[in-house]
Each structure stands twice: as structure tokens, then as C-alpha cells.
Length: 247
Length: 75
Image (tube, rainbow over all chains, first blue to last red; front, side, top):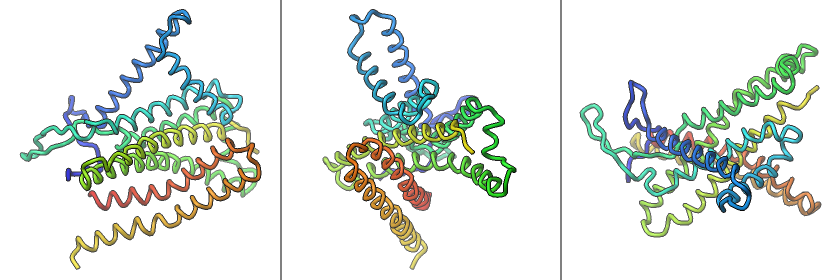
């Protein structure tokens, strides 16, 4: 059985900046995302009859996402939808790219402290704690930004520092703690699910090599989808809580 | 008993004890969601979204335990 590493391994470094294998996968997803976005906006300039089938498929997915998120976001849907859908599609791509054959199984040889190690060239980016914690941090920061932008800083800060009575002062303190715990809750939920899936697939493949990992692969596709939904929905719910008036 | 054996037993106990409460809670959430749908079938979509969110919160507890177990096992 190959060595399972909890953290992403360094493949090479550029001017002292370590490039890990999960970062490479992450770059691939960003590139793919960019290509799809460019393609979509190019197709939008064409007349309706000349647009391709892929365009309408992307459009359909976009519409389905929009109608999923609009009941949660309410009147601010047009403002907040791009952020939430961006989170959803980015995490979905990251999760599913980690399941492709070759990711995690293509090994390269590196020399480290006069020893030779074999490390995977690619690794699912959400199976790295750095990615998921930074996604959680981004989500919580965006929540604060929208709260301040839509309510005004005076109204928004009242949620955390309220000196009207002792109870709301205490709940404000709890709110501050919960904002910080959200970051780790987001990060560990995504990381735990995806990394556990990768470990499960590896272990099953070495227990029963033929066909046994197929149902687990289907399960992992579902889990990857579900985690993207959960991340985006939770972000949407937290933003809509932050921008709603409180008393 | 060697240290390795004790470590393996602890790892097994961590995940076993840790998943008891999340599994009970997930069952309870699904039960009340099903009861709500049974009482009011038109509200199914709304109830389903809320149920999935609540399950994700409950499942997060199990995932924390899993992360701790993985850290114990692979470091």
C-alpha cells in the first residue's frame, strides 16, 4: 500500500515558494474554469441559432443553480448569486478532479535529504487542509463584507458589540466566537469528507483490486457533489443571515 | 501490550465512540423531516433543503472525529 500523507507534498519550488501537488491540481481547475468562462462569454456574442449545445448545457446548469439559491438569498439574489455559484462550481470541480484516474496514482521520484521518495504528482486540491481553510476564510470574509455593504457598518457592528443590555452584550461575544469557528467548521468539513474519500478508495483498491472500488467511486462522486452543495448553501445562508436586519 | 497496539486500539475507539451521537442525531433529523413531509407533502422541497443542511451540521461532528482519527493514524 502506498504511503498516505496527511499534508500535500512539495513537488518543486520557484524562488523558495513551494509548489505542492495539490496546488498543481488547483491551477488546472482554475485554468479549466477560465476556459469555460471565456467560452461561455464568446458564445453569448453569437446569434441564438449559432450557439452550441455545450452553451445551452452550461446555461441550464446556471439556471438550475439560480433557482436553487434564489429562495435562500431573497431580494439580494442578483448581487450574491455569482459568489455562491462560484464557490459551488469551483469546489465541485476540485472534488471531481481528485477522482479522475491518474490523480494520486501518477508518482514522481524526488530526492529529499539524500533519500529517494515517491510522491504523487497530482492530488485533489480539497484533500489539502490549506485549500479548504482558505476557502472557509474567504467565505466568512465575504459574509462580513456583504453585511457591512448592505447594512452599513454601524448597523452591522451592532450584532457584535451591543451595550444596550447585558444579554445582548453576551450574545455579541458569542457571535464573534461563532464567526471564527465557522472558518474551521467549513475547512474541516470539506477536508475531512474528501480526504476520507481518497483514503477509502486507496484502501479498497488494495483490498480487492477488481471492481470493488466501483460503488465507492460512485459514492465519492455523490459526496463530492453534496459537499459542494453544502458549502455553497451554508455560505448563502450565512450571507443572508448577515444582511438581514436584527433587533 | 506494545505502544503500537495501544495506539491502534485508541484509534478504533476514537472513531467508534465519536460516530455514536452524530448517527443518532442524523436519524432523528431524518425522522422529523419525514414526519413533516408526511403531514404536509407540499412543503417537501423546503423541508428537504433544511434537512440536508441540518444533516450536514450533524455530520460535521463525525467528520471532526474522522479528521482526528486520520491524524492519529497517518502521523
